[in-house]
Image 1: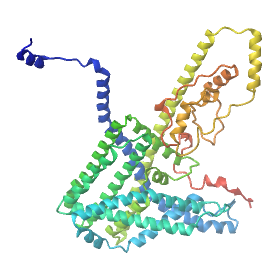
Image 2: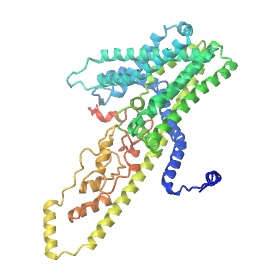
Image 3: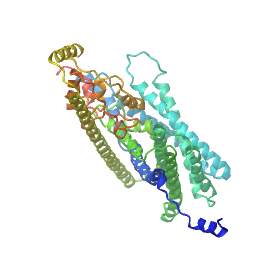
Image 4: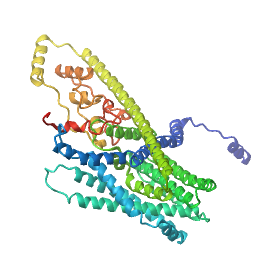
Amino acid sequence: MPSFYSFVRAELYRGYQLENDEERYVARRQKVYLFMKIPREVEKFMSYGFFQCTDAFLFLFTFLPLRFVLALWGMTTRPILHLFCFSRVNYKRILQPSEIVDILKGTIIIICCVILSHVDMAMMYHLIKSQSVIKLYIFYNMLETGDRLFSVFGQDIIDALFWTATERKGRKREHLGVIPHFIMAVIYVLLHTVLVLLQATTLNVAINSSNKALLTIMMSNNFVELKSSVFKKFDKNNLFQLSCSDVRERFHLSILLLVVVIQTMREYMWKEERFWVLIPDCLMVILAEVIVDWVKHAFITRFNDIPSNIYQEFTLSLAYDLAATKQKHAFTDHSDLVARRMGFIPLPLGVLAIRIVSQAVQITNYGDAFILFLAFLCLGSFRILSNIITLGKACDLIDTHQKQRASAAAAAGLGSIVAASTSGSASPRASRPEKRTSANEDRDIVPKNESFPEPAGLFTRSMSIDESQLSQLNSAPNTADADILAFPVKFRSASHSPPRRSLIQRRGSRRMRMGTPPQIPPLIPELGQPIFSNSTVSLTSICLNEEIFDEDEQTFTESNAK
C-alpha cells in the first residue's frame, strides 16, 4: 500500500510528454505567431490607404483649382470659337463630364467657405468649454456617430448630383433637376463641415484644458470600440469594410489634430514652446488609436480564423482601384473612388481646412502672397510625389499578382495535360473504324471554325466583384469552357487587338475535339480575384498627367477644315 510520502514524491517527480497532442500545440503556436504578425500587416494596409486619402485630400487644394479655372475658361471660349468658326472640332456639348464635376466641386467649396466665414469660432469655443465633462463626452460621441452617418449618406448625394449634371439630355427625365440636387449637396457639405468643426473644437477644449479628464475619457472611448467589434463574426468582406473605415477614421483624426494645433498656435502667437506642449497630447491620441486598431484586428483574425495575408489582398484591391482611375478611358476620379471605397469624403474636411487656415494666416503685403504661392507649390509637389509613389506601388503589386496568376495557370494547365495523356496511354487502343466514327461524331458536335464562347457572369467589368463569382469557378462542371477560362490572364487593354489564344487554350480546344474530357485545374485561393476590385485593368493603359482634352476629342465629330 503506497504511503503518503510516495504520493507526494510521485506528484513532485511525475513527468509527462506533449507529443500526443503535437498538432494541437503546433496550431496554437502558429496562432500566437499570427497574432504577433497582424499589427505589421495592418500597418502596411493602413499606410497605403492613408496615402490614398492624403492624395484625395490634397487634390482639393492643388489640381482642383487649376481644373476649375480651365473648365471655366473652356466654357467661356468654346462657344465664341465655334461661333466664329475658329475651331475645327464640332463639340457635342460645351463642357465634358469631368469638367462639369470640377465646376460643381469648386462652386460647392466656394459657397460653403463664404457661409462658414460668418461663423464665430471664439464663441463656439467658449460655449463648448463652459460645459461639464460628462456633457462634452456625450456630445463628442454624438458628433462621432453623426460623422459616420453623414459619410455614408453624403456620398450618395454627391454622386446623385454628378450623375444628374452629366446625364445625357435625350433620356427620360427621372430626377428632380440639377438645381435641387446642387442645393442638397451644398446643404450636406455645410452641415457636415459644421459637425467636423464642432468635433475639432471639442477636441481642442479637451487638449488645452488644465484638467485632462476629458481627454482621458475620450481616449478610453476607443477601447469601448473593441467590445462592439471583437466578439462579432466577420468574414473577409466585412473585415475589408472595417479596415477601410479604420483608415478613414485615422486620417480624419489626423486632420482634426492638425486643426487643433493651428488654432492653438494662432492663439499663442505661434510660440514654439506651446507647440512642444501640444505634441505629447496629440501623439498620445494617435497612439491610442493605433493600439486599438492593432488589438481589434488581431483578435478579429484570431476568433474568425482569418489568415494574415488577407491584408495583402486588401492592399491589392486598393491598388487595382487606383490603377483603374489612371486608365486612358477611366470611369471615375480617384477622389470619388476613395470616397466610395472608404467612406472618406474630402469636401467637408477641405472646407474646414480653408476656413481654419484663412483665419490663422493673414495676407497683408506682397511678401505674404509670395509665401502663400510657395506653399501652394509645395503642396502641389508633395501631391505629385505621393501620387507617383502610390501609383508605382500599385503597378508593382498588380504586376506581381498577374505574374503569379499566369504561372499558376501554366502549372495547372500543364498538370492537367500530363494527367490526360497518362490516362490516354493507359486506355486500350481503338481500331481505325472506331477512330473514324469518333472523329465524325466530334465533327458534328464541334464545328471546325466555331470558337468557344466565354461563360457569362465570370468576368464583369465592375468595381465590385462578388465572391460568388469566385465560387462559380470552383464549382464549375467539367467542360472545356471551365478548362480554358479557369485562369484567364489578360494583360492587354480593350483598346488593343484581341490577343491570340494561349497554349493552354489551344490544347484544351484540341482535347475537346478529340473527345477527351478536360481536367479542371483548381482555383488557388491565394491567386484569386482581389476582393471588391477590378482585376482586368491594364498596366499598359495607365497614363500620368495626360492633357485634359486629348482623350475627350475622340468623342467629337470633325467639321469642315475651313
